[in-house]
Each structure stands twice: as structure tokens, then as C-alpha cells.
Image 1 (tube, rainbow, N blue to C red):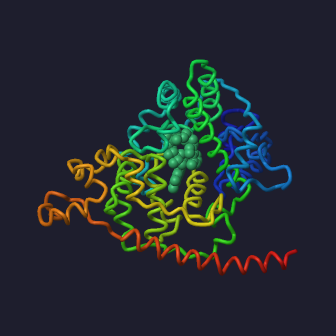
Image 2: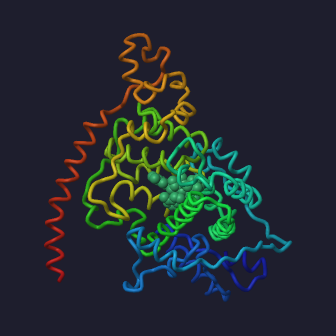
Image 3: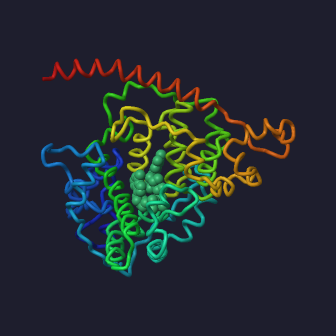
Length: 409
Ligand SMILES: Cc1cc2nc3c(=O)[nH]c(=O)nc-3n(C[C@H](O)[C@H](O)[C@H](O)COP(=O)(O)OP(=O)(O)OC[C@H]3O[C@@H](n4cnc5c(N)ncnc54)[C@H](O)[C@@H]3O)c2cc1C
């Protein structure tokens, strides 16, 4: 960096913080190195709309928020300053090395990445945002819960900086100024704003609690044991669990490098609770498949699903994959699209293809017409077992934490 700065004959280096635990320290080291080289180092909080330092609770110096609701209330009070301008670059760009390709990192995401790379530009991001604000944004409250309907698809652009969260918020504010909007359309725009605030929330978690990059944010959940792996992990990774909504989501991810937010939650919950596999394993698997690359957001979400991160709930968020499929994809549009083997099944059989298979006895033998696998696990049974183990753990640890709390008084 310092060599590059000298070659470009600049006297200040300005860049944005990264929020992954190890990145924060690396940025501090870089800042020191740049200053020792006699240059000015200016570090900005450019990824979030609102800097973590601006929304931190006044009472707890140095600590951030661990729950989203109070964070959102504070975030709303600090309207992010909107500076929408285009950068211009010097004509003489020093020579640089070729951009690395996914295969160099052992990733197989080359094919999935192609469309995203081809459309990675500020103009493309602006186009995606404009198209979203013209239509889907006004029904976002519904779209975010229905996997067959599109959300903004801005996460990769946000991740790579082809658009900023502040630019998006400014455009949403302009759209919301339309006096002819219906009340539910305004509500949808507001939900979308809250989604961007959630992104800032996870950045501030990573900023104030850097240890949470690899350790559960909740100290009291660190001793809870998830398995490292499971005999059915590979089936989950390939979208072959026999649970259609889980598999449809994972196949969407493999094919496109992204996945609808609700499908993500159901597929992640299945890994943590049905297979009992820890969130780090899931995060690592998806890291190779997702186009966007924001470790702080991935960690925050995975820990939230696993019940070891923000918003510690009394019970884990165990989704019943069949009930969720009926609720979120009642017409089966999403499942039929991503699981062509099931496309011709009638609605009544789509969510439980194995039962349909049993009913038809040998009419649809596995490996015959229906290539879709039977469920790799009995959801109801494993969910009950997991809950029993979880309740036992929280009961025992509640006692331990209560005595620790008393001792520290
Ligand atoms: C297990 C799991 C892992 C996830 N991993 C990632 C990840 O690695 N990177 C990532 O950006 N998001 C992640 N998410 C959050 C969310 O699913 C994606 O941001 C969203 O699906 C991206 O699609 P979109 O741009 O159409 O989102 P929209 O619904 O249109 O939301 C707009 C933007 O708001 C932000 N946002 C919305 N929800 C969240 C959220 N829960 N957390 C953080 N930001 C949010 C994103 O930047 C998103 O692009 C994860 C969610 C789960 C449940």
C-alpha cells in the first residue's frame, strides 16, 4: 500500500474499514504502516449507512447493541448523512496485478459468478435499484417472505461497493415522497429501510464484539455443543435433503450465487437443528457459493439462526421445513422452479413427495421417474431431541450464570 501510494505520488490514503474480526486489526496495522511512511491515513466507515460509533448506546462506553429492536430505534434517530457523488479517478493508474479468479481460492463458483461479474458496475447497480423501486420495493413486505418473489438483489452490489447503502436510502426516501403511494406501499419501503438498518446492526456487532467473528456472541451459549459434521452434510450441501424448500433454496444458491432471504433462514435452521451441525460449518460452505462477501453479515445471521448470537431467544428458531414450504410457497412456484424432478407433482403432493411416492407404491420408484430423495432425517423426531438437549443446557447453565452474576455483584 505504501509503495503504491508513493508510486501514485499521493500524500493521503483514504479507505474504508472492514468489519470481520481479523480485518479490523489488519486495518489498524495498515493505518500504522501508512502513517509511519509519512503519509496521512484516513479510515472511514463507508460500508454501513451509519457508522457503528454514531449509533452506539450512550450508557455503555465501548459497547454496542446486542438486540436489533433498540438498535433500530437508535439508528432511526441518526439519519445517515447522504452524500451522493461520483468519484473521478486520476488518469495515470499504476500498473496492478490481474484480478484473482475464484478457482485460485479453491472455489467452484466460477459459473455462478459469471453473470454477477458481467454486471458488476455502478451503472448496473443503479439499474437494479431503479427497477426494484419501480415495482417490487412497493410490495417488499410480502416479497421478503415469499421465496418465489424477488427481493432487491442488491447484496452483491453492496458487498463490492458498486452502490452504497446511503445512495440506496436516498433513492428510497425520494420514492417515499410520492404522495400517491398507498399505506401498504409506504410500509414496504419502511421494511426495506429496516433491512438496511439490520445490515448496519450486524456491522456494529462485528465492530464492538470482534471475538464474535469465530466465537458465539453470547457467552452463555459458548459451551453448547453443535456437531462439526453429519453423515448427511453432503446431501444438505447439494440440495438433496428430501425437504423441498430447503433443497430449492440451496439449489438456487448453487445456480445463481444468491438465495432468497426466507429460504436462507429455513435452510440454515435445518443444518443447525435438524442435523445439529454448527453454524461455522454452514457459513464456510456458503462462503464458497455466495457471490457477496461480507463475513460480518454472514456470521451475524448464522449466529442469529443458531441461537448463539444477537437477540438471544428463549427457544431456538427451529423451522419446520414442510410447514414453512406450505406457508411461504403455497403454489409451489419456487420449489417447482428449482427442483425440476418435482415440477409435475400435483400441489397436494409437492410438499411431501416421499408420502406421494409411498401412496403410489411402486409407481414412482426412487431412481425411476422421481429422482428426488426421501427425507434424510425425520424432522419432528430430531427437532424434539434437539429441543430437549437445548432446554437441559439452558436450565443447567441458567443456574451457573445466576451464581456467576451473584458472585460478580
Ligand atoms: C444464514 C444466513 C446467512 C446470510 N448470509 C449473508 C451474507 O453472507 N451476506 C449478506 O449480505 N447477507 C446475508 N444474509 C442476509 C440476507 O439473507 C441477505 O442480505 C439477502 O438475502 C440478500 O438479498 P437481497 O439483496 O435481495 O436482500 P433484500 O431483502 O432486498 O435487502 C436489502 C439489503 O438489506 C441488507 N439485508 C437484508 N437483510 C439482512 C440481514 N438479515 N442481514 C444483513 N443484511 C441484510 C442486505 O444488504 C440486502 O442486500 C444471510 C441470512 C441468513 C439467514
